[in-house]
Length: 145
Image (cartoon, rainbow, N blue to C red):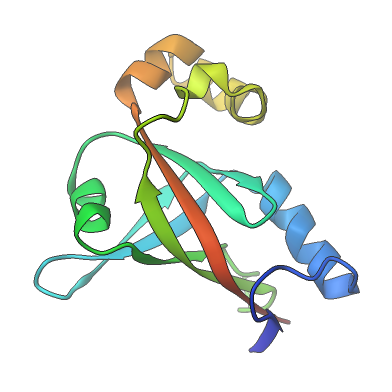
């Protein structure tokens, strides 16, 4: 697996452009945190990719407790059925205290409008349930065909 860039995603390359496009359009990314006993917890989450950060909204629970204890995370997109087009991101997470709720983030609401509606939520009711904002700053992008 090739490293795309040590710090930030290099969108001057064809591969970097492809990865950035996937990060903008994909609906789910897998978030890996670590439980107190050292076991990984890997869950699918909705996200908004913004340059070198990811904005995620969460319900209260184990992943939030994990992030409050250790901010080191990995993010992974689904690969192709044969295991190609791997995108993996290392990063540091912060549970945000002053981030606006999801319904006040136009890019997030636009990206997930059909999923929110399809689940019987309004943007406001989604935001009431998924009320914990998490910001992940990428420290390394990995990718390979």
